[in-house]
Image (cartoon, rainbow, N blue to C red):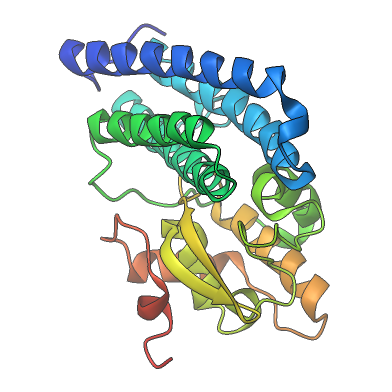
Length: 279
């Protein structure tokens, strides 16, 4: 499939120029990190490993968007025309940009706290660069529908594997988080309380300050609305809720779709006070 008219030539040039600049900045960052890994504590070394994996996944989505190709899970979707599929690919890539913004922002704060100004500055540059590219992608201010399969059944999906593929890079393989950086999800009331709250977070993301188990976290979690189907979201949340308390009621695909329809016009992340206005 050739390039789509989803993106103008000017928008394409702007993104390509910004991306080339970010690639150079990323290479410089990694060269400085690899030259002195002993100056970085173990928890931050772990984040560097996760960041490199995320960078690779982000690049795949970036290349698909720029070449006019769709991700494999969308290519066979006969319910979407080419324009809709490309819009969904754009939203998916935008979600990856947002995730990289958050990761680099957190790592900048950690280096800043350690007095490593040069490393902090490079991470801030990368974070702002991904924010800039996200601002160029057309249609991100327009709502999209969450992928829905009437025959989908979260119980037939492996929520643990889906969690590992989509969430573990930030929240840890055991979902206990990274202290002071990314909050735990197991036994977190943001996951175990009212079903609507964790569903809304996965659908639209979460930004700003949040308190989990008495500790305050500051950051940005991206939306997964373009990357995960309703059934996949339910499977991940049910895995986390079951790890926390096996007696919690399960979240169904219809629950996810119902919440998505209720907030169908929303295109920005939630903040804590919106999700829990009475606290």
